[in-house]
Amino acid sequence: MSEERRIAINVPALTRVEGEGALEVLIEAGRIVDLKLRIYEPPRLFEKLLEGRDFGEVPDMVARICGICPVAYQMSAVHAIEPVLGIDPGPWVRAMRRVFYCGEWIESHSLHIHLLAAPDFLGFNSITEMAKVYPDEVRRGLRLQALGNELIKLFGARSVHPVGAKVGGFHHAPAAAQVAALCGKLRAALPEAAQLVQWTAALKLPDEAQGFTSVALRHPVEYPMNEGRIVSDRGLNIGIDAFDRHFREHQVPHSTALHCLLDGKPYLVGPLARVNLNRDRFPDAVKTVLAEAGIPWPSGNMFHSIVARAIEIYYALWEAVRILESYRVPDSPSVAALTAAAGTGYGCTEAPRGLLWHRYELDAAGHVVAARIVPPTSQNQARIEENLQQALLAQGLDQAQDKLRFHCEQVIRNYDPCISCATHFLDLRLRRN
Amino acid sequence: MARLTVIGIGSPFGDDQAGWRVAEALAESTCVTAYDERLVVTACRSPAGELPELLANTDIAIVVDAVRDSGAPGTVYRIEGHDLPVFVAGSLSSHGIALRTMLELSDVLQNSPKAMIVYGIEVQFSGTDSVISEGTRRAADWVVEQIIRDVAHYCG
Image 1: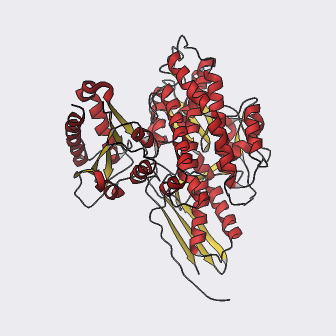
Image 2: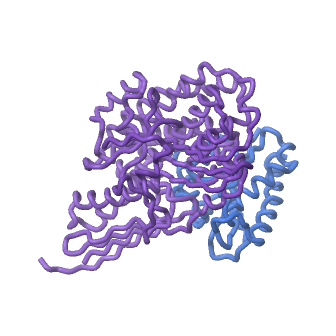
Image 3: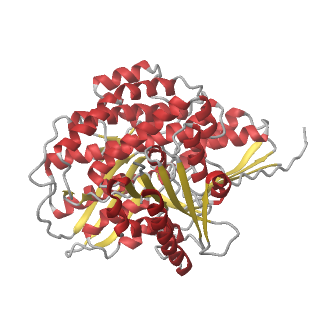
C-alpha cells in the first residue's frame, strides 16, 4: 500500500520526566529512518567551573549539579580526591557514607516509582488521578520518600544540596539519640517496603525482552554503592581508573549532553543493571523478598526497572538499619588534617540512576587542574534510543500515533532520566511519511 | 497553636533562585527567632521532593516560586484560596512534577494545610549561571517584607 501520510505530533509539556528534551521520530515506508532523543538545554559547564578551585570546595560545588541526587555527586568526588591526598577516612566514615547514600536511593526511587512511573502502568495521566484511586499507595510513596530525605538530612544537614559531606568525612556526626529515633522509623518501614516490591512486580508491565549490556560496580562482598570494579554481563571487569580505555564519550549533533559508549556500543546503567549483576550480594532477607516477586533475574525487560528500584529501596532501608543499629558518635567525623598533593584521582559510585564516574587532576596546592564527570543519564542516552527503536518495532509501526507516542514516553520515563535541572518539557515530533 | 511553614522553591541558577533568596533572607531575619518552633522556613528544589511532606505537616503554608506569566519581570502575585490552581499553572517547574500537581495531590490526599498563600515572582530569565536579575532581586526582597507581615498576622 503506497498511502503517504505526514503527521506531526507536539507534546508541549510531557510530565514526569526530569529535564528538558525532545524526541524526534521519522517513520517512512513502514521503517524508522530517524530517531533522536534531543537534549537541547545549554551545557552546564560544571567541569570547567571546577578548574582552579580548592579540592575542599568540590563536594559542595558538585552537589549543585543535581537536586535529586546530590549525595551521589558528593560521594564520587570525595572518593576521587582522597586517594590523591593519601588519606583513608576509616571505617566510621565509610559506613556512614553508605547510610547517606541509602537515603538518596530511598528518596529518589520512591519518587520515581510512585509519582513518575506508576501512573503509566495503572492507566492514569497523572499522579493526582492515580491518588484518587490509589491514595494509600501514593501515601506510602510519599512516606518512603520523606524517610529518604530524613536520612540525607541526618548527615547532610538538609536534603536539598546537602552540605554535610567533605573530603575526609563529614562536618558533623549526628547525636546517638537522633540516630536511634530515625533507625526505629527505618526499621518500621521495612514491611511496607517489602509490600512495595510485590506491588511493583504485580503491575501490568509491558513484556518486552531486549538484548542489552548491563554495567555496574561490583564489590567483593557488598551490594555496590561507593566502591567496586566496573563490570558488565559481557565480561568487562576493570578498575575504575581504566574507564577511559573502554568507555568513550562523544558528541552528537542533537544533544548537548555527551553520549557514552562501551567499546562502541550502547549499554545500560542503573537499578536494573545493578540487580542483574549484583543480586547475589543482597543479604538473605532481601533475596527472599526478591524471590517472592517471581521475576526471573537477570531480566532483559527494561520495564522490570521499577521492581529493581523497589528492591533497592527495601535493601537501602535494611542496610541503613544494619549500620545504624551499632552507631556510635566518633571522636572525629572526619580526618583531622588534610595536606594538598598533586595527582589524579578517580571516583565511581552508584547514583540512583547508575554509574557516576569522576576524575580530578590536582596540582601541588590542591587546586583542580582538570575535572571530568560522566553522569548516568549521559551513559544511558544511546541505550534509550536503542530501546525506543526496538520498542516501536515491537509495538508495530502501523499503530495509532497516540499509542506510539505514549509508548515512547513510557520507555523514556522508565529510565528515570535526569536530563538536567533547568527544564520544562519534552516535545515529541513524530513524522510518518 | 498554628504551625506556619514558608517554602521557597527554586534552584541556584538565574532568576529561578528567587524562592531560595526569599527563604534565605527570612531564615536570617529576626522573624524566625521571634516565633521559634511555630515557624519553619525552608528551601525546596523540586516540588516533588519535599513539598508533600512539608504541606502535610503544617497548618499554614506560604510558598514562593518563580513564575512566567504575562506580567512585567519583577511583578509579584499573591494568591490564596480558590485562585491557586489556576495561577500556579504558570509557575516555573524545574522538574517534571509541577507545583500545581503537588498542590492538587495534597488536596486529593487530604494533606493540605488549612491555609495557603503562594507568592509568584515574575522572572525575566532563568539561565544556568548564578546571576539574578535586578528586577527579580528587588521583587524577592519585597516579598520577604510581605511574608513577615503574613507571619505576624497568623502567628502574632
